[in-house]
Image (cartoon, rainbow, N blue to C red; front, side, top):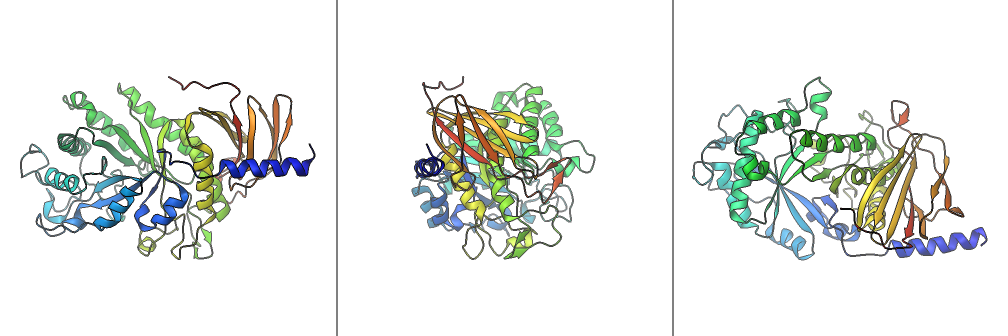
Length: 448
């Protein structure tokens, strides 16, 4: 077959692969109610929304100022997007110690008693939104600097165990189908400053609670928030699994926040960014992060965040939105849309190689996907084993790519990385990934 005809065939196959499909529960985004039409365009199946207690009941228990109009959340529910609630933040009046953020007054009372203000708040919140079945308890409690805007927890590790216990027993008491997730730790806030990771200290505190095993260690799954470096994302998801296993259990892990916010978007330039990231690199990061998250064992992923809003200028130096404040999509929006469609219905992923290139194999019930990218500024050619019938080959933006197929192998050219930022000898974010999609020659059994 001549090259032009082969390229046309690949383009047609690629367009079929990118056709809309039923949402896959693995893929989510943060705060889809801010741009529901964009969430529908992406095809995400779930969204994380934030409920801050100090904003909902700022002056006392009689206050009730929900951050989301009921009709907006109900519209998300009707659209079929699962709503996952992130709950955090203790108002001043409800603190056990006014100088210590996070730890509520009455936390060590039984959750059925009215003096346990945290339990009372959770109970009212869950009753107000009965269609919410997944609850994330707190976010990044390992941030320890009081001058940092994200500092929300000043309690001990034992206090956090107690908060989780009260949350688990309260929410499960309302509905056994409620799922309780331990909020994400940053990891880096400790490691960069030579401190033992908070998650290790939390697990040790959990070991000292004799009732924890009776109540499933007080959580059904664990969240992680990891940014910018796809390699560390893979390493740290595995690290969290290994830490739990060392304490005699393991739980599903959700990557509830990830992204590589650009520093070079003309609409929001960041001259002194911690990491230099071009718009193209943000787009390349999306496919790399998702592939490595699944290979590391993550159950779900979500991109932080769907769309920029005015408050983000205060909260973050960089723009994290897949969509700009003016409504225009960044290239990363399209990259996520491609990744969702190509990787939907995956059943297993594994890291094949990670040297000058990274290769991840994703198995699906009807075939498999190779995902590969260069980790250096140089374009590189690689060969991959062929096992099934070729369905399509495209880059991370959905553009068809040339592919040589000889016998039992494919040969593919990987574009070099822009390499705005290096980590050691490799580029922090590799080149634009490529997807090679095959149909199975024989049925694939789901791994046990």
